[in-house]
Image 1 (tube, rainbow, N blue to C red):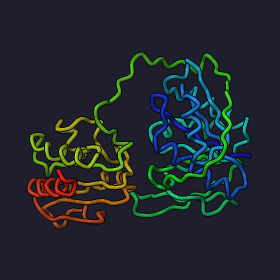
Image 2: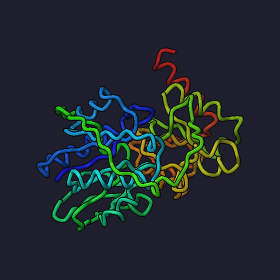
Image 3: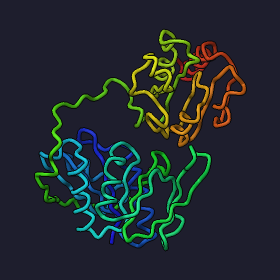
Length: 323
């Protein structure tokens, strides 16, 4: 019996997201009086793997296979299933990101295990396994009950936090059997965004909507984001108009974000957009329409012309930073 965590790495390095998953799993393992097993796929050195022990992983299964360098849903599902069987895992934890969304449902079918996606807190009960998630575009909280012997959850980013619980981690080479029919997908090229903070990693996000009037006004969004060390995002109409790249589109049909701070500039707050940012710890809205729906979701609101407010914010941030 154990809690198994899939810890994704980026070019051989773990990010806060992976440490948060291990912290979450560790807290559950304490209640269940069991241990946390972290699974790593890819070329990661021992020093990096040992970092997982800082957050409570007592065992690390290290899978290094040339056929698994790039994400292959079918093959990765097989690896996870074999790891779960080997460690007797009763709970498997993923991040609620593109990777987790790709693998967790497949693994759920493979193991005949109940699945709860986008959870935001520790289980409230273990008999039966009960855990909370947001529903109805974050207007309500549902308690999902899983009655299968094995449970699978995907955790919203920033929903739990990162907590150090140092343990002596043992690193074990794991060589699962990968069948040829599980490697049918061939990745010929990988294009990664570089030179800016990825939205899924950003602690702070500055986002713009149609209230920015046009792409020529986006300089203030980018300047504020640079000053704050933030990622930049946009609403769907903005990406549809071609003002910003589609990779910045945030909402139910785009990227689902949960940063510590989300600054919505000239965004009215359509329900689809709010559904994609509902996990944010703090939302600041700037809009000249006092009745804009975004203000209902915002923790702080500024009623005013965003093209006049943003320069003032930039000046204030520069003064605070001593620039």
